Each structure stands twice: as structure tokens, then as C-alpha cells.
Amino acid sequence: MNVEQLLLVAREFCRAHRVRISNFAALAAAAAASTATIEGIAVHGNRDAAAESLETVLRSVPALSGKNEEFARFCAEVYLSVAEVM
Image (tube, rainbow, N blue to C red; front, side, top):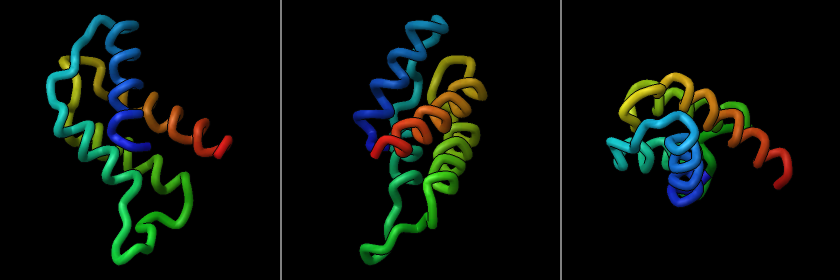
């Protein structure tokens, strides 16, 4: 999930849960973690590992003013549902 996609997810989550984005760098870090490559080789062997990395970063570096645990889990679920289609 790229940072623009994650930002869209965050905005919808914020609207639904009445919180706000407080750390845009956390969103960028989480997006980077889920799509990380080294010398063109994906860091994660599968989409489950990428989703787990996304969730771990969002739990470790809060992006919202509240409900960060829920947001991290939600983002991982969205990532997996989108990855299924692609």
C-alpha cells in the first residue's frame, strides 16, 4: 500500500472514529515498510508478512490522535483485502 492509499484509509478511519491524523511521517513509514525492497527484491516473502509489517509500524509509531491499535489492525485488514484482488 503506498502512502497516498494509506492516507485515504486514514482519512476515512478518522472520519468514522472522530480522531485526526497527528503524524504523517508514521503513515509514510508504515507504507514504506509494507512495500520495502532492497536492490529490487521484496523484503517480505508474502502479503501476510507485508501486512504484519504495516501493522507493526503503525502500532509502534502512532499516526492518529487516538484509536491507533484499531487503526493498525484495520490497515492490515484493508491491505490483505486489496492484495487479494491484485
